[in-house]
Length: 383
Image: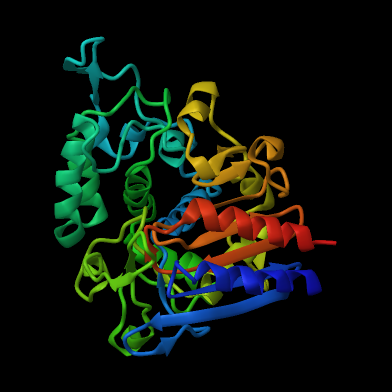
């Protein structure tokens, strides 16, 4: 498709004061329409990106986690409206941090239980670590310890001791909900989260380079992570690589996986085709539709107010395009996906049987600038 060649100058322009390298794969109806990589996996070693380069995909892990949990939903093991405490008893008798008009904090019982659906939709009251609220401060201390020492079940128990940021189901807040979902998958399946992903998704879809830890024989394929200064200067960042080392037991459902662009593209293609690729079905078509349906109410949509999410709602672990006019976007209603901290991005469009996977390794990622421009070019090329 000739018009997709417009991606080439765009990708090269990103690298002028952005990532050291970037790669993208565009697939429609099983046909690779555009597949290129530009720049470097390691500047110091003068090593260019390749088709088998391994990336830290961070929060693109979440889409895999939610798909895995939905595979168990399809077996009738749980319902989305079930209370979380039915399966993880540590979440019984949960409490909430509340603030009065003067900013005085108190703790009182939650108005109701966390539901399984609240984990999928980030409306549980669980947060990430930070400094904004007491919930965030307490969570930060747990997460700093978790990366080195906690498996997912231990993390779930630790997070359950922290009063929530709000009553479950009342707001949207990005946080550790999908890490707890990984712990649930372990309880429901009887195996570790990594084992479940390997057997139920990675092997059927032939995702041979997707894992929580980097094997010694693949270490040289792992792209360098870079910090970007305001003037575009890049410096290596290895501070976040502890979880990927052999012997680490932390398998984060929210951010833990490594993958290649080819592997993740196979997963994205499966969802774009209604849950099946090359004879391997991971989800039913109607379940993919449920995943890619907006599940947020009016207040939660107000909370979901990131700059790059104008026009989007949020489904079962994914952004979902619901108002192209509001976002100024030329995509399909129902197009869905997510992004990773270092700038990786997936777009899945079942109506067009279209999948797009973009990879880079840079902090901050420039996500609001990059991703919607990619979408504009790709949809502009469709006939």
